[in-house]
Image (tube, rainbow, N blue to C red; front, side, top):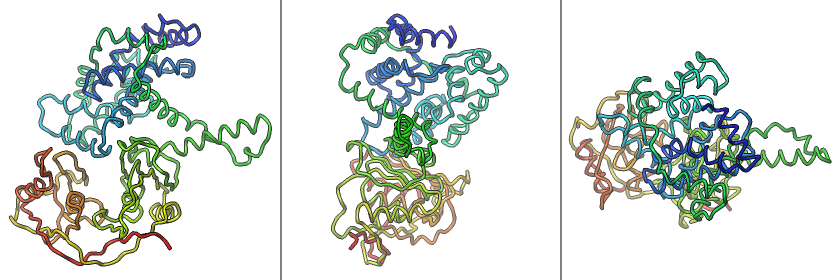
Amino acid sequence: MDETDDIELLRQYAEEQSEAAFATLVKRHLNLVYSAARRSVDNVEQAEEITQAVFIILARKARRLRHGIILSGWLYQTARLTAANFRRAETRRAWRETEAHRQSLMNESEPDPWPQIAPLLEQAVGGLKEADRNAIVLRFFEKKSLNEVGQALGTSEDAAKVRVYRALEKLRKFFTKRGVTLSATGLAGAISAHSLQSAPIELATTIAVTAVKGSAVAVPTLTLVKGTLKIMAWTKVKIAIGIGAGVLLVGGSTGTLAFKKWEAYQVYRDSWRVAGLDSGSIDRAVPQVRIFPTMFDSSTHNLAQTASGDRWGGIGVSVGEIVWAAYDWRPARIVFPSGPPAERYDFIANLRQGSMTALQAELKKKLGFIGRRESREVDVLLLKVKTPNAPGLAAPNLGGGDDWSGTGRYYCDDRALSNTNPPHLGLTRFLEGVFGEPIIDQTGLTQHFSIDLRWPSPHPQERAAIQQAVLDQLGLELVPGRESVEMLIVEKAR
């Protein structure tokens, strides 16, 4: 059956409250939703909860879905958002650390590429534009012919073929950057062969009862539904922009409409406030500089910046991390004489120019903090060469300047040990984050390297394990010392 049948079934449910129509939709798309959830959480019970939440959302939004929507593509995107929402509620680690951990797992040698592809497939496909994402879902998740894909997208078979190929190329580049090298054909084969898993048979019945008949739903599932609906609303509200300031002054029904649009604009302006904030969402957000008390619980923490390094955003972060972004100063070299505040905040600074200066002003205005530079004699770690020409300090091989860390691994390419542009990257920056003390580079090594540092993790003495890995693999030692270092002193403004 084609996509027109989906829309007709959705109409029957929305207008006639046809439980049979909704049950048919559940059975038809259950495996698609369940598979996306299963890849995201790798736990059967959690995947079932996510799947149930997705179809509850479908039941609630059935009347408001736009005409001509490709339901399978919508369900896939909703499953991805719901799974992401679930993961954020379950983990206390920063989003970037989690993604780095997945990247580290991907780069382990595997005879079958699927174990490397699966953990990041939702991120990769979710990053595509809607038309490209729908093409991938229809072609490889639902295994439709190019002719059927073209019909669903409202275009020709040849145009659908081009759309699918371009979307595959974007996915291939995404995975290549993360160390998984496959041809577009190989990637298509892997996704097509592994993307769907059979959901438990009884799950369809459970979903139909809870989503349509309003049977009792577990509190965690309802929380998940509400959180995902909020994220979807923030994303969708972008279309409400386009009003002029003068319209706000018009009375009557026009004024009411203008006020509603203004409210929608305010929501859109705040739409960056999602737990999964990343560099892409910072770039796409309305240019602004703002700091708010966090709207998330203590399990959510995320700090991200754009590739240019001059635009930042954070969710559930400390004042020290906002200072880090505002002054571009390493956390190990920031001092709060009266102790750092315990409060947590959400913030964004993504102006096209002058973001950091504007964030400094906002930090002073909202929280009353200013920073000043001062040289102080402090405890440091001196980075020295112990074993010259260690194999772990390899010549650059990609030239891309990658720099990330995750569980049990730090990787960079084409970086100096003490990177100065930008200063938040490089081995010494990573080590400062680990040890919480300034790292003084006394190696005399100024060239760029490719470094793939690994250590046992989890480890009861993580810092000692990293220090030993630096010695064994890079031939470098960390020696305690005391030096005069330029620190950033952060105090309340007078």
